[in-house]
Amino acid sequence: MNLKTAIYEHLKNDPQIAGIVAGRIYRSLSPQGSEFPFITYQRITSTNKNDIDFITERFQFDLVGKIEDEDELETLKEVVIDCLNRFKGDLGGTGFKVKSVWLEIVADDFNEDHSARRIILDFRFAYLRNQI
Image (cartoon, rainbow, N blue to C red; front, side, top):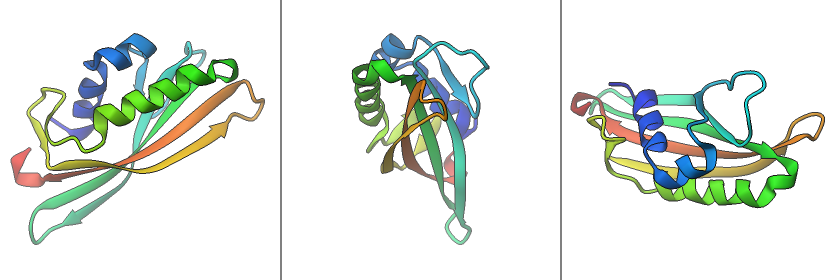
């Protein structure tokens, strides 16, 4: 099991997230023409502490929705934060055990033609390599 898959399962299995995005959770890029709202995520950095087999990985989550659906996107932001921030244990029921997850950054953005709004959430995931 890898962290990217465990994150996907964790988000997909959350009933509040599923109620908003209906399974539109994508690794890296969303398919062109994807229905709003949706979530994309990707690894930004990975830091290894080789002397203790400890790893932290920073992931960026992009929550994307229509400009006019700002309240729905803000609700999605809060639900994702509640789902991930301070999480410890078996991520997504996959057997991938994390020691800690914490929120580092929240930012707002828009696409170039201002037809979509994006909320950026950066989370750090910490785990022991030999406990995967």
